[in-house]
Length: 420
Image (cartoon, rainbow, N blue to C red):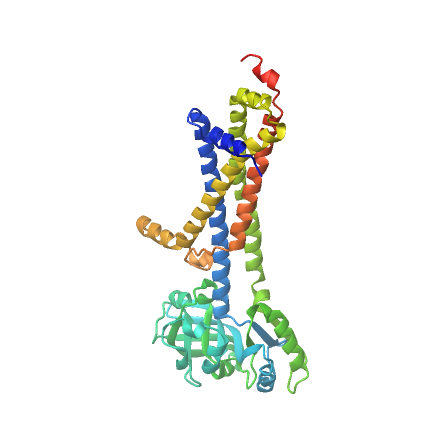
């Protein structure tokens, strides 16, 4: 336990009225630490929010895992689907056809990714059916040749509900004029907005049988899209069910399996790397505050050399002097870290709202969805990040107190009192 007089002397030196400049420097040290910790927490929270929002939006559009024929066709998919659904970890398995096409409307021609779906089953695989801004997925009925466009794709085509668009498939048809691409007119019956520009810009949904006719798939599909109970276990689940269907009737001799963690691995890897880099860079702000603590304590030690000498002559040992001045650095560290953590959490929880207010006042938009895949600035505070930042900041502050406190403990009484 620290004796009461060491605590009393340490706190008095830190905030004494006669040391106005020293107190001012101490306050600046605390403010620097507050800002450093707060900025670090806010930036990490924004990265967490971006990663979490990106993951949720990806999972709302794409399946947790897919099994596709290696040659692009999965022939006897009903039997394979029935076998996959026997796995208790699989919540849904839906057939799909996926292919490239050109969509034309008026003078606009845009490349698109066509996905053939079964509306009733699609609701069980992803949340895309709940992302419609116009129409609904039930309007995709066999033989109707209806299409649902992503919001950005509809904007690029300048198409709206009720318009007709021309689908140009790369499948060749033999004609007297030579091979010609398949051309089919579709009617726009819906528009969805997933919140992911990458999908809203290229994805178009049609009914499965209509896609099969256009791409001449017959009764085959591209593959099965799976929804699993725990998305984080998708890699192991899809591997397990793939081995099961390999033994089933009608299974392809070779097929390809993937999951959402592989399909978007670069996204999340970049976020993780960027988060680590920003942590190290912004930690320099905390380091500057730690240097301020060193300067503050060194000035106090030089100012109080005679007081230290008197205390030493009255029986205080080097350890007592070390504790007296270490208390000051610890107090600065605790105060700055606690206030910085509170400020960082407060800003993170209200950041999205404040950014919207600032955008409204400035009449601008900070995030371009075509670049960042989202137009908002989400923030999600993880307690582990807060604890890590606070621990590192406090550790730096404690280290910053060691040298000045050591110098105070090494003060020689006779040398300090020689000219007093």
